[in-house]
Image (cartoon, rainbow, N blue to C red; front, side, top):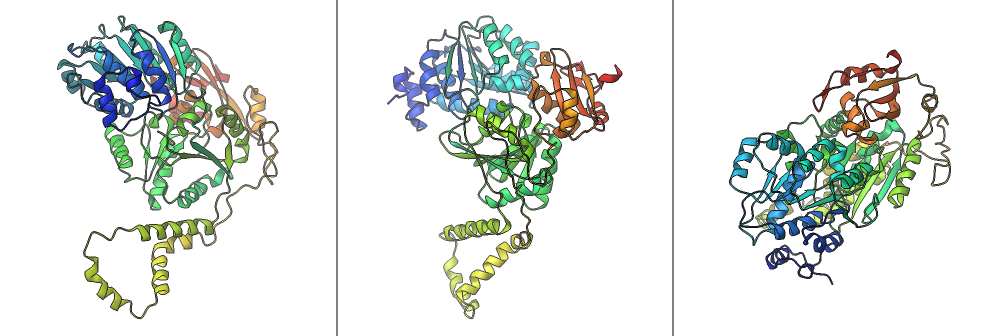
Length: 561
């Protein structure tokens, strides 16, 4: 059995891992740590979230830095405030027996003055988000010239969020670095370009296959009509009374609307999206981590960098367009050896997309029946009985009340008491689901790995899955003959977008749904968007004239140019 001591770590670091209860390194740790301890080797580590990547780079950094030198020697760059704080928290645990080592987190949304003050006190390891780090560089509040080690954590996430220029700026400002370590869950072309440009013959370590879903996650899906998504979501939540999870939506408007509707109906849920202030975001995340909230509903952008343990379910309210996005979503559950469920709500036209994701992540997806009302009530009833039997009665003077209770219920049978308890607890559920309709779409046949999509019984055949590479005329036909137009926008791949992140960006900006879009054709400097003619004015109003990274966005009807 491989041990941390056997990897060549400093005895103080081994002592810290023992204190944390870490007995055996994870695969990424076992492969990366011996290489990184040399201090001079560039490395690309590909592994899913929750596999122990922080220790894989954090332990070598602690061993390689000079404890007596109080200037920044190692820099860890990550996409979000939450991940930044998480990395620092873990590194603090690893350095428990190295009191001379100081680590600081620098990120936006909090006082830059306090962070500058902490930097001046002396620090060896800096963990930073790209935007705040560049602010500090431009203010000359941090000197990166003596940085020897640069770690890019969740590199694919940073590129998806449009940080490519920032990453290159940071790497250009660390001229004395001896090693660059890049960790990522996936390997898009942008990552490959960065590694070729800024790394010297990096060793590539892959734990599992790139884009392959975590094998400890059960991938499930339910097929329903598009207009039944919300009811299906509610029924899934009710059927899983112990659920603790994240629901992913395409747009911030969907996240907010669904959260408000579920809250009004008594569910412990809140939304996480780009319109929240940092204070609001911290409040929501604090309540979710404390399990005051049972569910969090979020957009992909807002959820990046979130690492919360014990998540039982990830729910795709709609499928993402990009397989890498699906991989990141599903990776929020089934972490650190535990099991989890990633389930998707799809309609019949999305079966083709689902099969494509299934093939690429190389994992079987299981089709489940949406439970009927009686199934939901039965599941809730059994859950309540379990809670009743497990109730802790050891604290409190319950014995003194027993004679009074016995007298009160002396004329009522045990069965009658149980019925009354059940009625008090389940009256709402029983009434709501008394005449619940069947939400399942009954399919004659649907697209498998080889075949075509025949559609659902009673559905029109012209509502087929959209296919990459279709022409403009094909897009109109796919949408049942809808009237489409083309929009021009002066954003492209040079702005750090790839197709899925660009789609998310324009949907979030305009609060439109993906169904109004056709083909998106992206170039380096510009893009063209096919869109239902009725929705085009809304998108233009929402995006034209706005700023992106200091540049004014221009969007207009391509036919009028």
